[in-house]
Length: 471
Image (cartoon, rainbow, N blue to C red; front, side):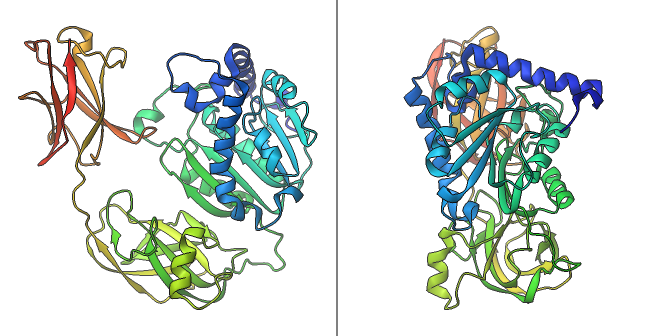
């Protein structure tokens, strides 16, 4: 157990602040603060218990059931013991208890735990604990088959505290157990400069996750959403080594298959865009040891870190069964993104391990997709981000959220068209947590009230028009 009295005063104050703020939020409206879908509404509505629990069920279906084979290694969930970190009042806990044999759930807020106990009092396989915000001292080492945390660490204002919690989560895992958690992975400069509190928490990005996995000796299976607010990581606790050095290869690695990540039947890989990532299926690797920290992909000699190294996924099974006669059980799936700046070409790709074993190269076709047409998804005023736009005053400054722009977008190649008038934007930025570019522009002083159209120009590309009511 971590003795708070021995911690620096700043850390003690931070943990006390976390407890105080989440106790207050639980008393005000626990359901609103917990349910991220409900928080998108401006009014703090109070959903029924049934509506609230249904959102938890949908999350568990997406985050647990869709990934169940990997998380359970094929075991019967009813035989497993799971720990949920940051349970709140039990939005997901109830559904987890329907799936797993035993569910232990923790929260830093005493008030959240109090309400959860009332809501889940009839569930005999649920055990609830308040934590001190830094450790899991009430729980024994090597006790859980699965540890899970969703939408919790993004609110923790210190990377040091996040790491302490992850270290404890790893401690209570059984060897072979899996830790799946979400952190805020944003590394954008404007976010780094934002004051962190118990709502806007600190970033814990890919580099920190990789470092943590190496420090504790975890098998890093996957990091999805690097650079985004919802960055999901899956780690496995390796069994103790029987020898002095981990063996990552049982034979020379060999690439047996490749395809586009979202659709493995497609062999050509785009160099930019949402689908600029590829899957490799590789034989010869020791599945219990190999991970996303112990190998790299070389694309024309450039080293690329994979974001997934693990068992073959369901989406690849049909494609592999059609092309390979070998059993899929001992094959490893590797996924990696195409690095920025790669050109259309026939690329030489190979897998190289940290121990320097390498596969023979394979040729993969990289190509450039057709340009993405910009799309305006919202037009707001800069005053209160409402949809009411005025010809004069503070609400005549526009905030335009758009898809289809890229890192090349700037005030030199983007223009806003209102009716027949072309306006140079004031600024352009990327909003990582929403996955959109934000364009700000000021309506000209002589703009008249009107119902017109707004378009966005990016170089030679033009978005479809959206209606604009100028009051």
